Length: 395
View 1 (cartoon, rainbow, N blue to C red):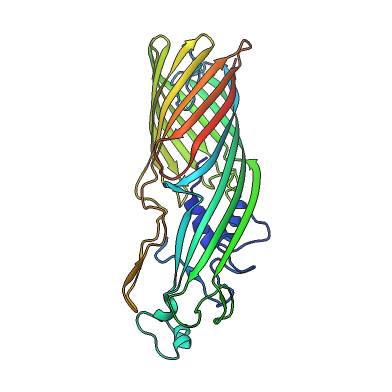
View 2 (view 1 turned 90 degrees about the vertical axis):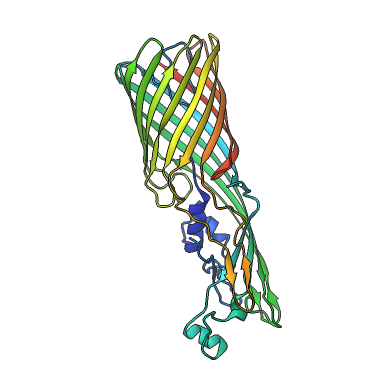
C-alpha cells in the first residue's frame, strides 16, 4: 500500500497530459498554468521553470496476530480464508502536511543563441541575471484517500508447508490544488508572467484537480515452511512476491515487482504468545528503496472467544534514497543569495508503526478482526492512522 509521492511529483514535472488520464497524470496538471501546455510553462512570457539540481494461524488456542506473522503452519489439507478492509487517508510527507507542501522553482540558466537574442550581445557566464532571477513560489495541497479490500486464502500443502494468495481491490481518490506566484526580481516591466502583458502582468494563478479510480491492486503469492517446532516454540521461513498487477497510473499499485523474505520465530506460554519477524524487502522500482524488515509483538488470550494483539512494525530503508530532493539554489549575480526550493526535509524514509487490535471468535468459528496501525515516526508518505476490519475462517 505504500505509494511514495516523490515518484508522482517527478513524473508530474516531466509528463504532459494525454487524452486518457490516470490519477497520477492529474497531479501533473497542478503544475500546468496554461491550458494545453507543458508543466511550468508560462503562457504570458513563454518561459519554462524547473527545479535546479533536482532529481497467520493458531495451534495454541489464540486466534493469532494481526500484523505480525506466526511460525506454525496450517497442516496438510487445511484451508484458511478471509477478507479485510484497510482504510487510510494520507496526511504527511516526511512530516510535512500534505496541505502545505511548498516549492520554489528557479529559472534555467539561459545560454547560447537564445541568450543572445534576449540581451542582443554575448552572455556572461551567469547568463542573463536580470532575466533569470525571477522565481515561482508554489503551494501544493493534496488530499489522497485509499481503501484496500483484500481477499486471501492459504492452503496446507504439506504438514509443514503452506501456500497462499492475496487479491486486493483498491479504491483511490485524489483532490489537489496548487497556488502559484511569480516573484519578480525587479524592473519596471515583468520578465515572466502567466498572462497579460509586461506592463500589466498576471503574476498569480491556481489549479484544481480531482479524480478517483478502483480496480485490482498488486496480487501477492506466498509460501511458508516450518523448519523446527517444539512444544513451546516454532521457527519458519516465509517468502512472498507481489506482482505489479495494479495500475500505477491510477495509484492502484506500485508499478514494480516486490519480493519479501522473512524468518519467523514464535512461542507460546499459556495464554501469552510472543513472535518476532526479521527479513528483507526487495523492490525492483527505480524510485523506491529496498528495506530491512523487523516486527516484534505478541497476542494474548483474554477469554476463550477474544484476544488482543500488539506489534511494533518497522521497515528500514537500505542505502541512500533513490528519490533525491533538490538542494538550495545560489545566485551569484547581481548579488549573492540562496533560495531554499522546498519545505520537505532531506531524510531517510524509515517507517516505524505501532499496531494494536483485537480478534473475536464467534460461535460459527468465524473470527472478527479489528485493528489500528499508528505511525511512530514520520518518514515517507504516511496517514495518521490505518484502520483494519476483517473476517477469517479456517477449516
